[in-house]
Image (tube, rainbow, N blue to C red):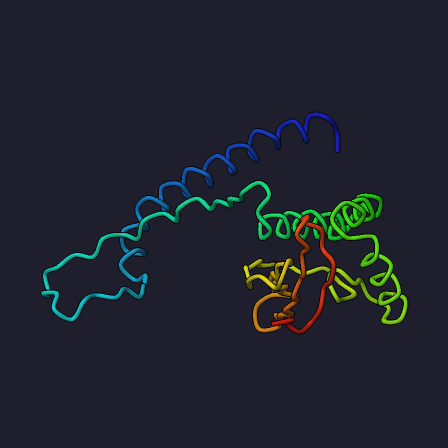
Length: 187
């Protein structure tokens, strides 16, 4: 092949591509009407609705928000678990130093020692009570216990049909430090 033969092919390749694009766009517009007629969607219509009633399109999902209150025990536990899971769950670059710092900040020194012993004995992360990191979590108030407060943390591992939940009961002392994490409620 010489330079001229490849140069001669280029315009014809461009013409073929342009013609294909025009054809695809043309078919897309003209085929759109009949194609939409065959799309089946499930729509709930009230039983009392007449046959001529039209169903409105569903509204777009509202933006999600998370709120908290400074000094509130549930917010504090949610902040801890959210940051801790983020530090441990970054598979490309988990931040072990951040996870240690969070534990030092949020856990009582006595509980941190007991937790380290539990981890050594069980071969798992004591904060999560697992060897892996959850995909979701929920934090719920579980009431007061004397001068302490119990918060339920529900961790979801996996997704879909393989999802498994673990409930942890986090005891927070009156100065907002976590003094215990258990799998059974103290209530």
